[in-house]
Length: 119
Image 1 (cartoon, rainbow, N blue to C red):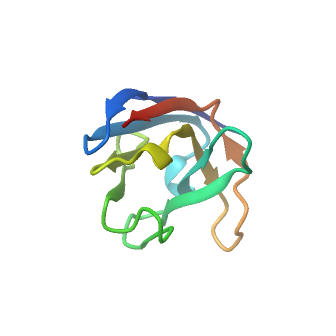
Image 2 (spheres, helix red, strand yellow):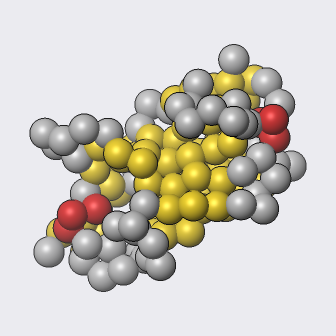
């Protein structure tokens, strides 16, 4: 089992920045890819960003490419999401996730943190 706890959400004005963090515990975090997903009110959960076990490879949803950066520190068992140039449409609950390499669906999920971007 991997336990994931997000932090760093909040209210920010459009154009602003926010950094989300996710602390992992349990099994060896570096054995898993990490990812961020989000779910806006009335919408399905969607992929935001993903980072490989070592951090050498990342990929992003087109909607956040160039604005968000995912990173990880395996020594500290953390993964972060730096969000810049935020837009009202980025408003959602953001979830940290971890999964077995080679699989597309994460095995473990955090409880989520709310990000609200005001216009």
